[in-house]
Length: 381
Image (cartoon, rainbow, N blue to C red; front, side, top):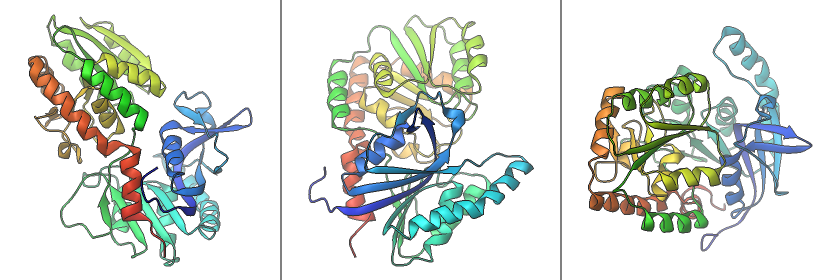
């Protein structure tokens, strides 16, 4: 718990995070559960609104909500791109508004995770309650081109009242004073201890191992990764390990068989297994087309993986040529060139980079995060 913590009574969290019931217990997306458990250092209880997602019954990245201090409320899941999907979303708005409004009335401190339909409702309602304190976390890119609805939410967040704070990925010029740069937390004290031990022992003078951790879809760039490796001929390459699942998995499995390097496609893994992948890898590759700031970059840095990542959103504010490789043009040729650069690093340069990144990863700890919440977000009236 951070020093001089000021405990508040109750926190309301409004999100579109998936939740599902298994054998009478509620499960939800693991990283969000971990974050909320850490927030209990500041609050006595949390009421958490999310989407009912029965289609995620077998999702291995879901964890049980096992704290009696976290109460869950589910909304009917909405979304999609077709006209019928949009009509369904609008039809569900009255019910979502009723649930969210009734909970806002019960809470002084409200945290909403945008961009999402529940967050948009909370934005509209925030002006009705100037005496309450709202915190909106915008998870996507704050500056890159985006859809109409996401852009509408960014505009709304820029004009919220004095009772609202908005946290975004990165620092940007000409922002209103209530728009704050915040790192996404992903590391606890144990992670830091384990990471320090790994970094102190890691070497890169034999075979070089790479990993990809993310969704297997076009936006995350997994196809570009395989295209880039198709043209590399180097005896220094050990293996490429791919962690994640998605619509392209079968396609990726087929393409991987034709590449001249060892590739392991592991699917979605729990955190402890992902740490093992980081421990074995020297570089993490993430050629995304759009992002806020992926937590996986901070996690990989903590465990001695140098990032080879897209220069989008605020990523370039944390990764430069002194601690990683930025992909300026997101295509397989540019990625191929960065992979070649990574393989000619000297051992001294590699050690300098991973130690720098380990220190930088302190910004992605929960203790750092909670301290900033105390200092900049919530305060007692």
